[in-house]
Image 1 (tube, rainbow, N blue to C red):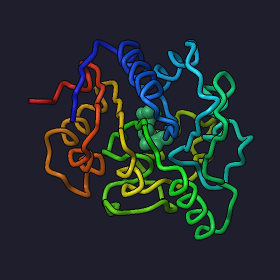
Image 2 (cartoon, rainbow, N blue to C red; image 1 turned 120 degrees about the vertical axis):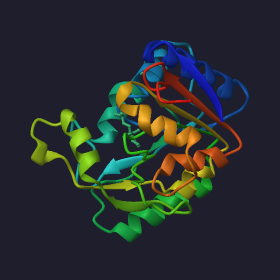
Image 3 (cartoon, rainbow, N blue to C red; image 1 turned 180 degrees about the horizontal axis):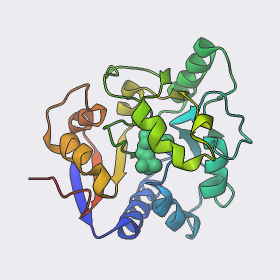
Length: 234
Ligand code: F6R
């Protein structure tokens, strides 16, 4: 793991942007994308830049089950607002949260990824060490699946919804095995509330209880964290 400690998320976003630019220049064509607050500073730098993704494909990590793409809190809507409106890809894939057939949706999405192997994957880190929506205990070789969100994740995401009761309890998510097949991974984490998960991801044992700890075994991972998120590192 290459660990880069920066002053704040703005500086992290600049570094994240540089990694995207370099990957693009080096021939990466399939980008795995995340939502949430963490990648926003990187996406802001990208959308303000000259980078061109019109010949590239994007594949998002996850989507809430039950939310239509038009729902303002859907990850479809997030990606439109923060990335695709300004920087369209030739094709963008996000799981279909309205597909009630779990088997059909997860198989369909896994086939998309098999047909378009991910060159560069950006991740955020959950406070409980999750990546994608792979909560503690998820098998390291998991493929795309339907996830029951933990209470801690529901609580963390409630800030985006008008009412806590509106937060969906399920999501479709790429699996950890799917994520680990990406050729290059960038994971960012900012703020004191990520410090414990960051320490466990980088210095802790590789354990299913901390899904991100498996990244220690990936050949090409860059971690960008701010001082607050780095506070627990020895
Ligand atoms: C989002 C995702 C999640 C988030 C994580 C951190 O697509 O897969 O794993 O990256 O929950 O969320 P934020 O960035 O909001 O702290």
